[in-house]
Image 1 (cartoon, helix red, strand yellow):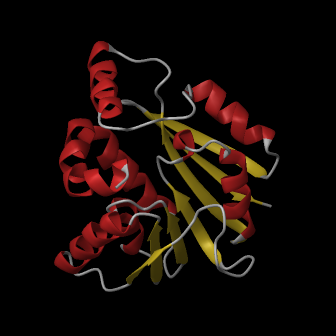
Image 2 (tube, helix red, strand yellow):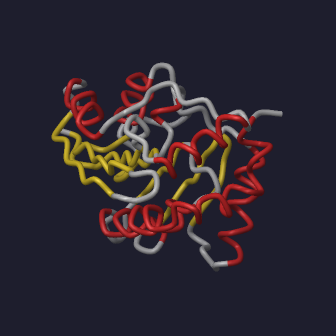
Amino acid sequence: MDFWSTFAKFYDAAEKLNGKVYREMCGLTTELVPFHSKVLECAGGTGELSLAAAAKADSVLCTDNSPKMLDVARKKAESRGAGNIEFARANIFHLECHNENYDIVIAGNILHLLKNPENAIKELYRVTKAGGKILLPTFMTSENTKISGALLGAYKKLGFEPCTEFSPRSYVYFLKGLNLGEVKAKLIKGTIPCCYAVIIKR
């Protein structure tokens, strides 16, 4: 069993250690999702960003590669009465849907875990409608404080393995280098900071 399946039932408790960042990340997600939109989330984990999107969207498809994570997300959505979210297992590199199918596509806190994040973003771009947005909030782990360093160290001992240590500058530079559309970004400060980046598809 992989890290995410093992950690699924503890993930929300661990999120509370970085609660300020998660709250602002969810708030920005709700703000960026238009009313009556069609939303896809990839690597949705326990569904917090899907729930944030569901506050305004007509429909949300929350996907993840871990059935255990999806089980937690599904139960959470049911308990909160979010009936406009569906759940499915999916591979972020190979999405089984048509081109330009979604108004908003979300992939939160996953790019730093992938060996080829640019390929994942190009797949997200493929399924996003022209003029739509790709929401890419990502943890910044290159400049740690004592607290964030200790927290990340504990995660790594449990099997958490980031592939890239982004800084806000290097993350935005990476996204702009893909030349897929306008890139906007906001740094959310906290125990483990998050750079909330958005690509607006041409």
